[in-house]
Length: 295
Figure 1 (cartoon, one colour):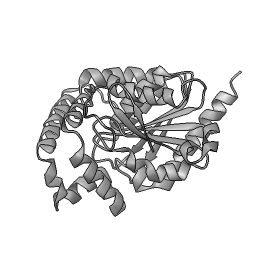
Figure 2: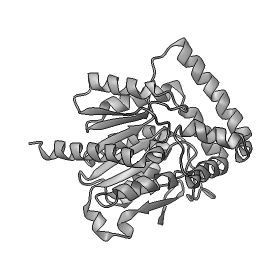
Figure 3: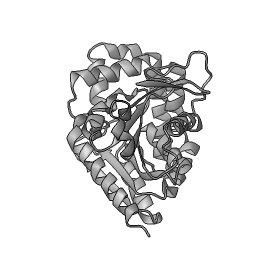
Figure 4: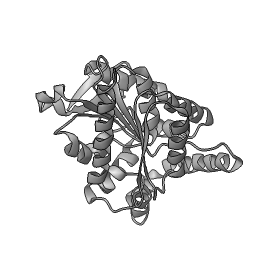
């Protein structure tokens, strides 16, 4: 585990190549977190993948161990992408085609921006539970209601430390039961994340213009893309990820695949780690073969 001094924060990150120097020769995976959560929830997947891949996780500004005191970070897609770019360049992953980028929930938006910044480095992209929706009155109304829920949950988030709201919070995030350890991670990260960062992220994640830009960016990724979704997701409607897959499949010339987890929720990496890791490996191998077979 290390810290990287950046203009916007002192970024905490973990790189499996630190404990296993041979990992520097392996293809790398950068994991990008969702809303109001630190990088700790990637650990089971990292353990499953680290024999074949160099795995890099980090805490975005406002979460986990990253230090923002004394800094003035901007809580936007651009700002979060800037700090991830700093990490990519610090680790030398921007100069050759050795990088897989995996983004979960809001992190899918940041991951997509990174894919466009480093097209020559990118082998594949994976987006988990971060979809798009047709713009209708009902979706607009739903986004407005979600904005109100974000405000309410942040103003009174300490209530989720106690039962029965604690269990309700966990069940909304994960349809299938997860270990007590990671239940504690979810609650602790949400209740202790920086309020300004958490509110800003919640807001831009449902901003119409941000969502339109996200759609354009997904369609523009020139590398193979995997869309992953738990079809029992109670946090973000899973239909949005399926719509994203279908839109890109129709428009993009680059390969696009879909992994549906029929009984899982918003956290497939914790609910069924082996199954989720298996889908990632299959996608990574496909993308690596895709580029190795190019003239």
